[in-house]
Amino acid sequence: MRGGSATPNTRNLFANGWGHRADHLPYGHHVTAYLPHQGTPANRRLDYTAARLSRALDRAAENTALAHGITLRQLTAMEVLGEGARLSNAEVARRTFVSPQAAHVACEQLITKGLAEKAMGTESARATDLALTELGWDLLEKCTAEMVELENELARRLGTRAESFIGRMSEAARHLAGGYFGDAAMEAAAVHRRQI
Image (cartoon, rainbow, N blue to C red; front, side, top):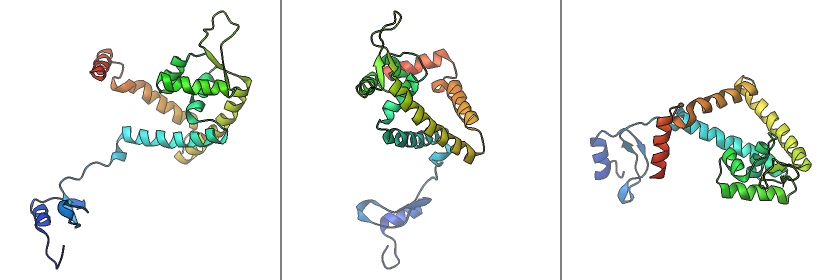
């Protein structure tokens, strides 16, 4: 805006009743203009807020992992292996929400570091099954202690218990189940859409 008069573009925007601020217009004009509708802040939506929380938790867990010489993906694989069952690369991939290729790389890196090993010596074990080594168990225990401390501090600031907080999130994930709420037909339709 120069000399107190609006450019034609700006006048058109005001004349159309546009309602909130934008700092840039086409054709190089730098003015205060108004846009039509005020939207809902993204942080009022559960999906956005959950993604934001997930990113914050991942960053905190990554800090712990890196401090102990491993990556976040390796730590996540160790957490599921830390349940005690021997798992294949494919099972690790499913449980850690990554591709089979990514899980394979993480698991091979754990083996190279001496933190995991392939199954040997049991009749029921598959050659591709993985388990933590003693070194892996020791490292996971250290990482877990640090993350539990972080979870407890978060729960304290929220005025709740960490177990209750985690339990409610797990319950929400179980009920929502991808948005199907247990409806097999809805889930099948969603899977079909992803394949198109």
